[in-house]
Amino acid sequence: MNWFTAKDPLKKLEQQRQALDPVQAGWPEGIQAILRTPLPSAETDIRQLPLLVFDFETSGLNAERDRIVSMGWVEVHQGIIALESARHLLLQASTDTDSAAVALHHIVPEMQQHGVSEAAAFDKLWSAMAGKVLVVHGAVMEREFTRQYLRRNALPELPLVWLDTLKIEQAFPAASERGAVSWRLSDLRRRYRLPEYPAHHALSDAIATAELLLAQRFRLFRQQPAPLGEWVKASRP
Image (cartoon, rainbow, N blue to C red):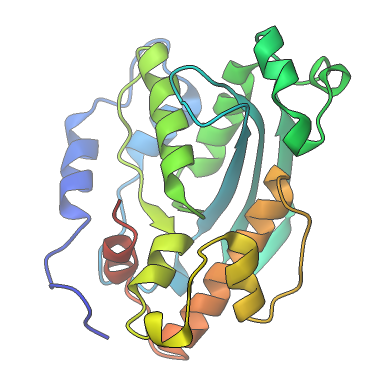
């Protein structure tokens, strides 16, 4: 399948990784592990790569002003969703505004009082990310909130490999022929006849996204190799 040019989309990211010294005082160990790990080549079959599928629920859409309410993630290894790797973290509310904005996620302020700090949550996330390809649905939110956290804490921009199931679906040559008008996670899952899950829960959405990616991979490649480079190009913002 050759929808895109043959240029390696991961070369620039690997150059960025090599330019950063992973041994920096004060940097979380997870970030240092990310920077120590070479990136896979564009030809690598994604079935052979460990994936980290994750989701953020936030207090709003503005990454500069709003905050992350919860994080959820799960790993995929060789086409199998590893449910034992699943994690769900509630973050402490940093302001009254955060507390007032979380009704959509069914998270009340009392629950957030028992949450972890933003720093502790990201430390766990960095460790989970190390050596993995990242998968999200609608990557804009996760990308921007991650970038803002790095900037606020004087941390480097990380050479992360992102796959976006929303963009991948839009890149399908036959998408318009199938009458695709909504790119919401729940609507795409329905087209693939995947079961319905509760929305606006970080872990539930992460697992739902993992299932969608596996369904997309089968539809596109069946039993043929699924080169990582084509998925990365399809996932570009």
